Amino acid sequence: MEFINDDPLAISFVHAVKMGNLDVLRRLLDECPSLATGRAVDRQGNSRTALHVVTDWPGYFPNGPMIVKMLIDAGADPNAPIIGGWHSETPLHWAASSDDVDVAAALIDGGADIEVLGGSIAGGTPFGQCGGLWMLERGSTFGTAGCSCRRPLACSSSWDDVSRRGTYGFKSFT
Image 1 (cartoon, rainbow, N blue to C red):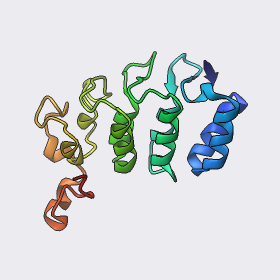
Image 2 (cartoon, one colour; image 1 turned 180 degrees about the horizontal axis):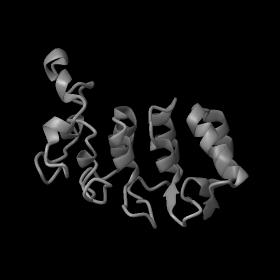
Image 3 (cartoon, rainbow, N blue to C red; image 1 turned 30 degrees about the horizontal axis):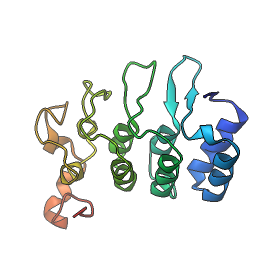
Image 4 (cartoon, helix red, strand yellow; image 1 turned 90 degrees about the vertical axis):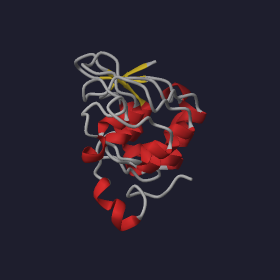
């Protein structure tokens, strides 16, 4: 099912995601299960998924990881790309570009492919979106294949924190 971005149901969904309102999201999914698997289409014909809404910039929406799990449990595909745009980013690309580690972890736990290509930065992987070295702990390959900007250490916003925090600037996933 496709939704136009200004459809009242789509607007209610986006608002509930941005506010982290789990009760409203549950009600919307109960009333319209296709919200989890549908796509929102913009005026240019590009489409994105419900998981793209949760991972949209700037990230860090309240209850983001729980919303990701709720949507995946309802049938959302964590590897579904943008369609119709100049890139084919997945929700993990978007979470990585916002350094939203907890949402990225929920996507990976839900089956997101950390090596999928299609990023807006040279068609690279989510790691290439400069999302941080934390992706290494989740199994991303290291080096120019993993970082499309060819400077994986320099582009990680968390790299400066390595010496201060003793890890990759974020909590350890081990």
